Every structure is written in C-alpha cells, then in structure tokens.
Length: 309
Image (cartoon, rainbow, N blue to C red; front, side, top):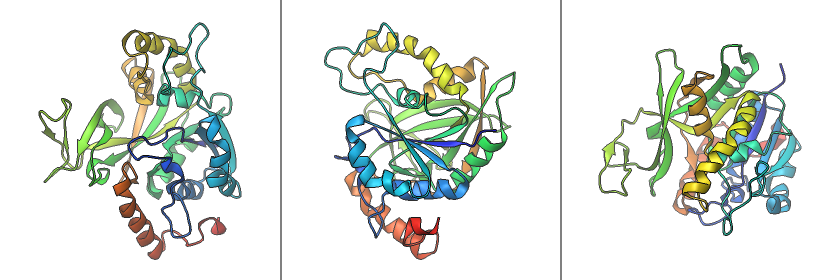
C-alpha cells in the first residue's frame, strides 16, 4: 500500500476571525496551531503534507509555515482556484467565494495517488486522532463491494467555543460504528447546561447532549473519493448556479453522504476523546495559547517543536 498523505485545507481567510488566522502564532516561540497539528501527524507516521492554499498566499505561507515544516516532511502545494471548473462551466459574474471544501479537496487530484487524510488548517485535533486515522489508512483498502473511508468523531462538548457559535456536522453511526448520516448544523453554542443549536436564526433552540459525536472535518479517504467528487461536481454546480450562484458551495461531507446513501462507501467512525482547540473568533486565541502552554509544560510538546523530529 502507498503511504497515507496529509492534506491541509488552508485556503480560507477566516472571515469571522478577521484575518489570516492560519498564520497567527499561538506558541511561546511563534508556533502556529498548524505546527502542533502537523507535529502530531508526523509522530503518527505521516511523511508528506499537501497544503491547499490560494495561489496569491504562497510566498507568505511558505515563509510562515511551509519552509519550517519542510525540514521534517515532504511539503507540496495545491491551489484552490475559482476557475478550476469542469469543461463548459464558467465563474458567474461577481462571484469571488471559493466553491467549498469538496472543490478544495479536488485541487490535490494531481498530487495525491493513494490514501489521504483531510484536515482544516486552523483546528487543533490532538495526537489521538492522527494515530487512529493513520493506522486506518495504512491497513484498510477499498473492496469490490464498497469504498473504505473513515472519519474521526469528537464529543460535541469538547468542540464548542465560549465566544460565539460554531458549525458542526452531527454524526449518526450504526452499532458497528459506521457512519450513517452527517447533519450540518451551522449555529451551535455552548449553552448554559449543554450545547444548543438553532436552525432558524435563534427563534427556537434545541439542546444537544455533550457526548453527541460530531465531525471536525478530519476524514480519511482512498483516491476513489477524488474520482467520485470530480465526476459528480457538474451536477453540484448545476444546482448552485440555479439557486445561489454567488455563494453556493459543495461541502466535502455532501459527497460522502451521497456515496453512503448509494451504498458505494462505508465510513468507519474513529473516536477521539481529545479536546479541540481553534480560533474561530479573536476572543478564542487566549484560550488556545493557554492550552498550548499547559500541554508544553506537561511534556506533551517540546518547547523547540521541530528540533525533536
């Protein structure tokens, strides 16, 4: 089997955060969240990382993180381009927003030829998640009956912020821990006693148990995912262009859900008890800085992060 590759989605500019949060330091020596994330991935066994970025970000991204990571891993770059569309399609006038995470994943189709994991650049996932996903991708292959994918599920209570709402995919799994459905909730808050969600702008709320399993967009795929997403993209585009041509997106889990519904894919849910950290809002940063400092003091990470790999 080919060794799994890590794909990092880093093209977003962090509109709610108010800047290029991927390059905002959180460690005592200028380390970024992605430093700790990729450090965990490298310790788990990943040797190659592909950053999905906007082409105009490349020089800044190389200087801010890529050149440093390249001392310990093979680093490649893929560009999410607005005009990277199937033949016969064109960018609608006035559209500046990328086409979503499924489109971002497709940008690596010429760089990845085997199994791969996908993560966000601005999330801290914890070491347990990378150990689990690397082990799965290293030992599991597609079968004639179905594609063999995986995702790492987190406890909802470990993934909310004190400073606003977050978007999470609520996961349903069967007794064998295979994913049956992902329901996207775009507005989840911590709540007074447990997390709560609204789907009507706050008019009504529903409580969600803290141990609800959610997706943090840490997926494991074989190359078949890229083949399927590419083949299905025109139909997604047709729907977007008809309904929301300037802002519609294709989300990576939408392709997964479609493949599950058709019986073409099975997605193993790998569970992590690690706590998520992220900088969805500026107010989140002190919490992340404090958590990283505490984990470093406890020996989970060295002060000079990349000198020990």
